Length: 334
Ligand SMILES: Nc1ncnc2c1ncn2[C@@H]1O[C@H](COP(=O)(O)OP(=O)(O)OP(=O)(O)O)[C@@H](O)[C@H]1O
Ligand SMILES: [Mg+2]
Image (cartoon, rainbow, N blue to C red; front, side):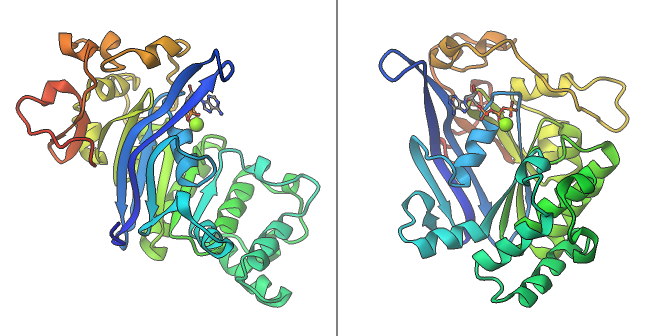
């Protein structure tokens, strides 16, 4: 696998068995997902889609937290499911850092926050002693607009939500990662902080060369901060391309529906509401053909029978038969 790719996800699937191993049903949470990010070309890549579409599952596979059922994930050319020894695993953990939705969950309320930062610096061998660690920690905190003296000796509840989230990000930065995976990192902070954290992501990309996978329901912030976007629907990536193209001229009927759901008038394209479908039926996951066919106003006969493949249209990949006749199929490679 070429090392000019930072991440390459190939035909990645995760199947959960619900309701027992023998009598249970299969739920394909992520279905043959393909995406890649270039090394040396930092970008903010958004994963969007309604609740249950598979965003977190895909992110957790890339983080190595859960194992894929099939497919591959390469990070800087290495298959991360095959990292052999402790050294390789520790390298990967340093390189790819998670940022979770609720920063308070990341910290034990009875432990002072700087303890986590010092532990990270020491455990990953970034610092050899306490004074070196203090330097590393302070540097990471300053990158997020805080400093060690501001958080020193303080418990999580003694900091504001925004400070805790920034401390989480600082912790992630201590290992000097090349990739951050942020799963709804700003959904629990207020609007002004949301923008300051997103601005900070932008700064991380431009000043520190860090790439970010940003998972969100909020297409307005996605539009504001990201370079590319992948829209997920029932485990599939249905449209992937430059943010401007996808959000201003959506091609997949599902992306069109998502954008229509932004309330109008919408001077700054706010879209904070979670779209929630009726509970996902396992039957629907198992149905043949396109998972969106039942809701699609353009559905054709074959949409109910055959699984659509990715078609390259206007700088993006769209998983829809509407575009397959006029354009050459590019298989499932993205
Ligand atoms: N450990 C699990 N066991 C069984 N099913 C799971 C498990 N984790 C996720 N799922 C199912 O997989 C599907 C995708 O879930 P996932 O959490 O990836 O969605 P999501 O896009 O992150 O949703 P949200 O926007 O609500 O966070 C859902 O139907 C979910 O119920
Ligand atoms: Mg999720």
